[in-house]
Image (cartoon, rainbow, N blue to C red; front, side):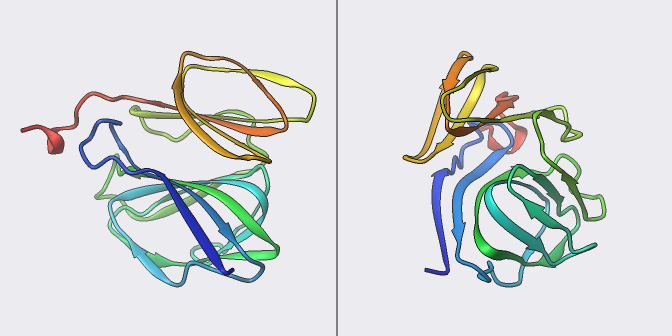
Length: 181
């Protein structure tokens, strides 16, 4: 195994507002995605386990618990390569809020709670829930990653039990102009 990507959601009708794709990616040690381009998209990576080296800009290394936001803007080419323990990553692709801007990359180390994405149409909340404990998650699209897989569901908020990483997307699901008839 070098890379497996399980696409969890890929609405092509604007029904989830800016969300274009949500994938559960697993990379073997030293495996990468291969150099590839992005344009007019924001890619939000939540590292669930292992580590990932980003090969664009400052070449940031992401560890479990980190959230990275890649704003492709007018375009870039990059790769992401797993560290010695491989990597398990939730990759979310959002339609860019600022497609005419220069590309940028920011890392939120050990993200816990709300992560500022700098955009009005998508909010991200994340928490690692230890084994034998629970956490109360906010309402929204819940992505719950645990030892038995990844579950995605729209929910009203409430308790979740560990061990798991809870990721909640609050999305402005007003039908975007590009998706209207």
